[in-house]
Length: 308
Image (tube, rainbow, N blue to C red; front, side, top):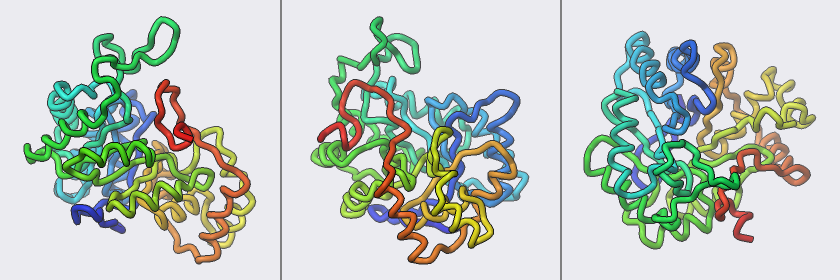
């Protein structure tokens, strides 16, 4: 398994991991997917409190390690702080709840899921106001810097090895770094040929922040799988378009394809070496088609284009 070095602390993260967003706990679906992934050679499993599957992901990790005769330190596990737990006072308990559900001893990477704080008083995972808009936490007043300061203290517990952020744009990273005592180890963002994130990657590289890509295959409504360039390159290598997308992704960052299908899980980790010409041809796709698929209407600026 290819490992990528996190520049600002020297730790390493596997280049391809299993994403578990929308992989439910019903019928042991995500449990089986995680076990299958570990058996197939995956050494990074990504989950989040907001996915609602941490307990089953943890069970899959424990049983997968046992069945593959691996140790806990052989696998990298990521989970994330929910937006309803962004208040500094809620961070320690939220972290411990995730660790308890996973039941794997420690967490390799704990991330702030969004640069957004939602009202924690409603009991809802994604609280809404009567008019249907997102119920932003007015007490925190959008100060994700305070949330980050609380996350920094988690490093002192020895229960987490890295802390990071997700869905942070350049403007929000610049704002965070003005007060951060610890530079985020990782920024997890949507990244694929329709959204190559070149500006963000360059900025993060200058700060030693590693980027990790979710939705590297696009999404269910993506036309990437009908793209002629990708189809030609896939045919030349005797691989699927998904395998080409993942192979291109690891030339830029680490990637987190998600699947619960055993055949696709096995195929997704079978990457190929693309030529420089093939990489450039895929890079050029965004010149004619650009699209962000994951774009919740938070009501506050989150993505780079929100600040333009």
